[in-house]
Length: 127
Image (cartoon, rainbow, N blue to C red; front, top):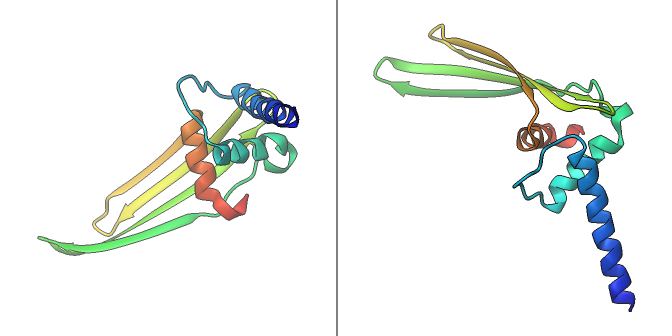
C-alpha cells in the first residue's frame, strides 16, 4: 500500500508541475523531461527573483579561411526573462558581425516552451 501512496504522490507532484507550466505554455504534443520541468518551475516559482533578469552577454568568436583569405566573426547573445502571473517570455538580443562588414542584429521574443527552455539552458549557472 505504501508503494501505491508513493506512486500517487509522485503523479500528483508531476501533475502540479505540468499544470503550472501549462498555465504559461501550450505543451500539446510536447514531452518535457524532469530536468526541463524543474528548470521551468524554478523560474515560475521564483518570479520575483527572475522577472527582468538579464543574462551576461554570451560571445562566440569564429575564424577561418576561404577563397578570399582569412575571416573572423563575432556573435553576441543576451537574454532577458519576463514573467508575471499571466505571461512567461524571454527576450533574445542577437548580434552577429563579420570582419567583411556583414552585420545581423535581431531581437526576438521567445514564447514557445522549447525556445524558452533553450534560452534558460543557455543562461545555465546564472539562474
